[in-house]
Image 1 (cartoon, rainbow, N blue to C red):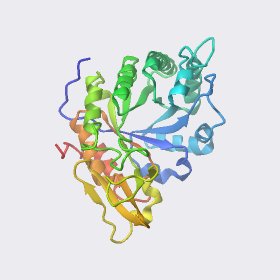
Image 2: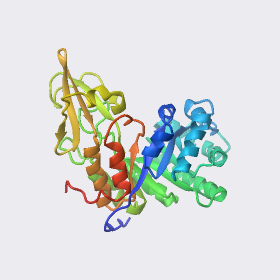
Image 3: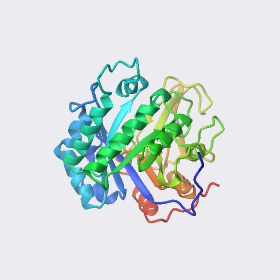
Length: 358
C-alpha cells in the first residue's frame, strides 16, 4: 500500500462513545455541554444465529425512552448519532463469520442476518450510521469481516444514501490490517483505539503513551502502522481514553512487581481525589500521562490517567498527523470535572493545532 501524504493540518471531527451503563446519567444539559460531532451509542450484539440480542441491556437501553431521548436531543444539537455493533473474542468472531470449524453450521453465515437487522434498527430509531467494533479478530476471519462490512455498507446506504459506516480497530499491527480491510470494504471512518497500551495484565503505565521505553507500541507508532497499511489519513480518527488504570504493587514505582491485575479507574467516580485540596499528580514526560502513587498498608497503588492537559497534546498529535479528527472512550467518565468541555470545544474550533511534543 502507498501511505497517504500528510496534509497541512488534520480535521476537527470529534467522535464520542456513550456506553449504555452511562446513559441514565446523561441529560440535555450534558449533551449541550459536550461538543462532539458524532455520538456513538454502545452497543448491541448478535446471537449465534446472527439475530440481534434484544435481551441484552445495551439493546434494551438504546431502544428505551432513555435512548430515544438521547437520540432526539443529540439531533437537536446537530450531532450525528451512530449505533455501535460489537463482537469480542476470537471464538465468538469465528462463529459469527462462519469460518470452517467455527461451529455456526448455518446455510448462510450469521452475519448476513445481522446486516439486515442492524439496518432495520437504525432506520427505526432514525440514526445516522453504524459503528462496527469487532475485537480480537483472527486474520483468518478477515476476508469474511471485509465481506460483512461491504454488505452492511451497501444495505445501509440503500436505506439512507447519507448514512455513514465506521469501524473501531485496535492500536496493534493486527488492528492496522483490520483497518485496511475495512477501508477496502468502503467504510467512511476508522476509529483507531489509541488506548490499552498498558492494561490490566501489564506493568503500570499510560493507557495511551505518546512515546515509551518499556515497549514498541505507542500512539505515534500506531498511526504509522495504519498509514503504512494504506489507511487514508483523512478517514482516520484517533481514539483516546477518558479513563485510567490502577495497579497494586509491592513498591512505590512502576517497575516494582504487580500484585494481581490492574483495575479501571474512572475519573467521574473519583471526584474526591481529583478535586481534593492539595492533589498534584506527576506527569510522565515521555508517555505524557498523569500518575499518582498512594501507600496502602505494605503495598502501593499506582494510578495512570489522562487529564485535559495530556489529552490536548494527543489531540494535537492527531491534527499534526493529518487525521480526520479524534474521539473518546468513553463519554460520561468525565462528568463533574473541569477542563474536558473546554478541551473538546477548542478541538472542534480548530484551536488545537500542532503537536507540541515533537
